[in-house]
Image (cartoon, rainbow, N blue to C red; front, top):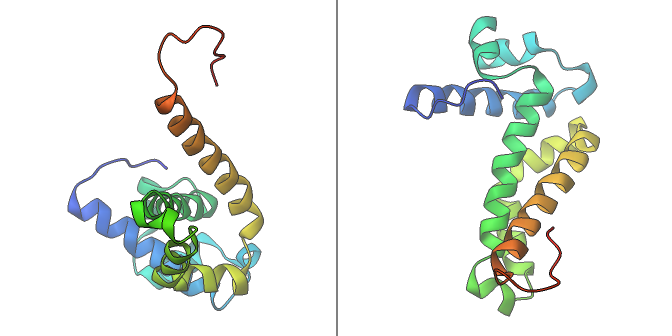
Amino acid sequence: MRNTKDDRRSQRTRELLGRALIDVMQQKRYNAITVQDIIDCANVGRSTFYAHFDDKDDLLVSNFARVLDALTEQLGRPDAAAAGGLVPLFEHVQAHRPLYRALVRGGGIELLFKKGQAHLRASIERRLAAQQPLGVAGAAPL
């Protein structure tokens, strides 16, 4: 992702483009979607799109990374373990239903599977590293 600004206008633009991608994915297969389709749906200019994202893959991965962060947070809640992790998982899917519906209908899941797996692996590695006592003899770094 190109633009890492956290000002409200940039956040709104990224959210608008993300919603536009989801809307277009409910109508077309991911492989057939163009940046022009996305910017037409979002009603923004091409330069605005490229100020925030490298391409449509970057937009999809960026949106899904935010969704995975939310899932990781929900699964880390104290009540998540008590429910076996299923209740927070179903709450998460319900909260992000348009994205998951678009992925099922429009494709793009292969890209997200690879990126999602890497994202979750990194999250697990960070958690394990944080729980590992410092200076333990024989402990191999992750």
